[in-house]
Image 1 (spheres, rainbow, N blue to C red):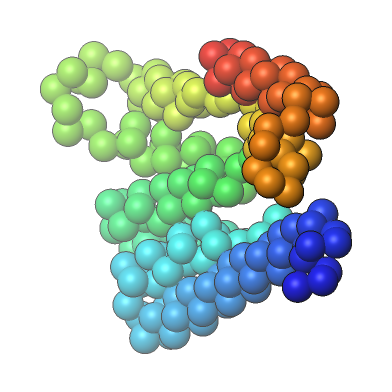
Image 2 (cartoon, rainbow, N blue to C red):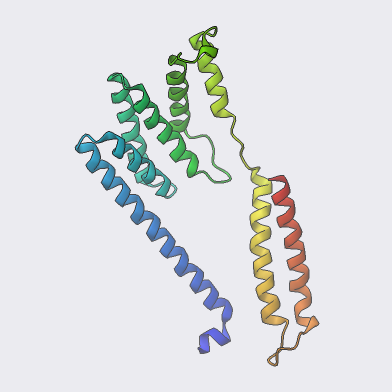
Length: 217
């Protein structure tokens, strides 16, 4: 109790560190669990379930985690095997799992991932090879592949600069409101403008930052 009343900032930092550690532990644990399940299903030749769990392992992976590389490599291997066996639909699902799994783990400053770019090439090739749609009858395979590749690249990404401004504005706004509650009131609960003035102006500036980031990101 003395620590909480005397140094609320220290307590807040300790709580945040604890929560962050728990989140990281959960993510790492789930990634290992999904990867183990995927390996087991692959050994049993239950490839559909293996693909699903490898995709989940990618989505639970931390940046620079070995689990991501293992899951991507396994999915690429499965996709190649299925395509060689003539099962284009299952191979397409495996390649889409690579692309979708890696897309789900992007952050603001992520660059292009070689494995995802290769997966999109493979997806475009498989889709172009399937000429069942009547609308594709007059197009060559190369034209279809280029069209599918262009569509796969046509994704909407947030602007990194405005996205950063949005996140910083949100974090600063929350922190400023905490300071208002801490410094803006005396022990009797009466509002003190002298102590709350700067946090209030900071909260307003942060709210403007958040709104601009939300508008342009």
